[in-house]
Length: 196
Length: 173
Image (tube, rainbow over all chains, first blue to last red; front, top):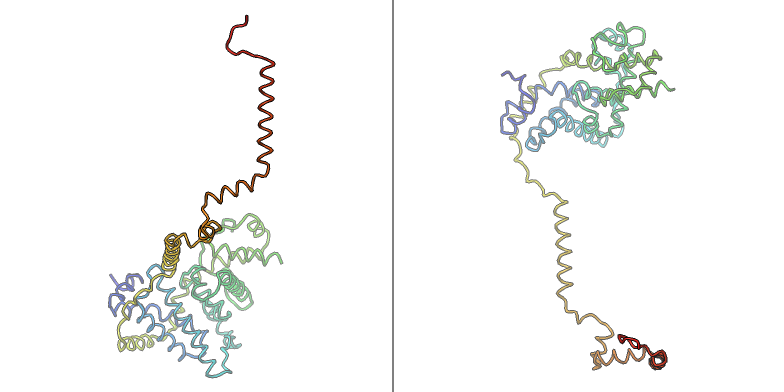
């Protein structure tokens, strides 16, 4: 059985029993995901790296406290969000003028994005941070609204609103002239709504 | 204005997994903007899932090695912490114990501690029976009148009986 076929739950259970290799596999799986999730929350690349490192360290030290009734990804993302909040607070205390700048793309960046618009996540990067995060957790991590609300420390209604705004804004951006694809995308879809 | 409400319903249906209600469906059939939004929202999930691997490729894999080297220098997982006892059962048990203790103390305490008028009189040397007799007399000021009325009623009854002269159980002559 290859490592890819092993589920997160099995890896966590082995890591709890003391297998560092299993935990390393979890690091390989989740560090790129955490990186892209935290990318627009933290000011610099160095800070993101520190934050990811801290997240895994915390998870490694507290793996015995992980409740297997929940998904590992939910637990890991929750740790990352909490650490990013405390990191933001401490940086604000150190430097009162520090305000995380919302990601607003430069004109040339927009051109590049239009060229790269084959990938929806590159376009999603232009959304507001919270909308991007909600979208990432929903579709990249396959979390329910309840899980998203838990990770982001928001209400379920707020999580729904963030997802709705993310869809509206993405649809709006894709319908702007310059994007090669139409708003419906190129992926064949099995319709959930019977009337479509 | 109504389209924004219908679009919200479309998003909500996608997130909850429930089907759209009839009025929303009818509106989507009529409205091109809402129909386009519904189609886009539905296709978004597949598109996002498909594009994740390509997006993750831009990640610098050197960071993994850094993380793992930090983990190897660290001690292993902390030993499982002793779980704190749940607060609710402990509080319930404590309050139940308190109620039972109060009940036992209440029952065990001597009843002479209760200060009633009778207890006070007994302390003064007056027996309960004599006190009750006194009370009966005080409570019945019409005792004599009632006795006289009873006597009068009895004599009236005797008089009437002697006049009617009914002989019960005897054959008439």
